[in-house]
Image (cartoon, rainbow over all chains, first blue to last red; front, side):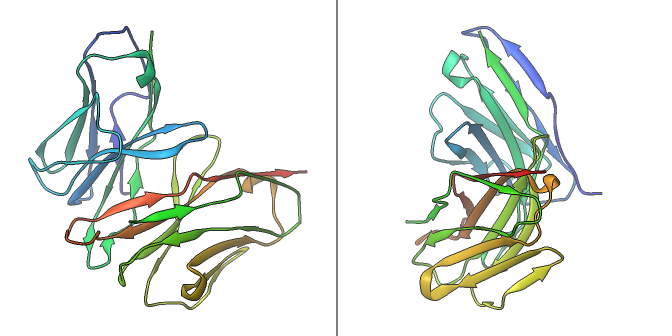
Length: 115
Length: 118
């Protein structure tokens, strides 16, 4: 069974803390993505990666960084968490095709609350 | 630029009614994919269908059907004889390579909340 696993379902952090969200996929996919989901705003792309050590900014990269040292793992880092980063974070992976990215497989999400 | 519009923010129906969720997309690419995802109350996004830009044939899977029309840039989703378990947020998405780039990413609409009442 294909799987995208996010390390934490729920996290509570304080303003200014450094936060790591980890994501692992077992499908040998080239692409990995981090989205955040907020009510009324849908899914917004933060960063994505199409290869090891490669990363591309999405639509809302400010305040975030990412790391992809191994093909199966894609980490999202909040260097100094702020209350406006309270959100649901979704990791996904996909295979690259001639039509662009194939379907995304999503993890269960990580709900982050910053106090 | 790539864009997906789901104009219906919320839809409510009574069980056994048919319901159509609209999706309109914009792209200048000639090769692309269109997708539908379901997000039930549990939160995990579930892939429903993928369609490539060269295949306009409509698809039916049980109570679900999809109508892809390039002439109107639409990829609508119909649920026949809706059930309470269909209650979820449904997202339409577009995958294109972006002009000048070989990188692909998915562009999501804002989603349609479907509520099916017993």
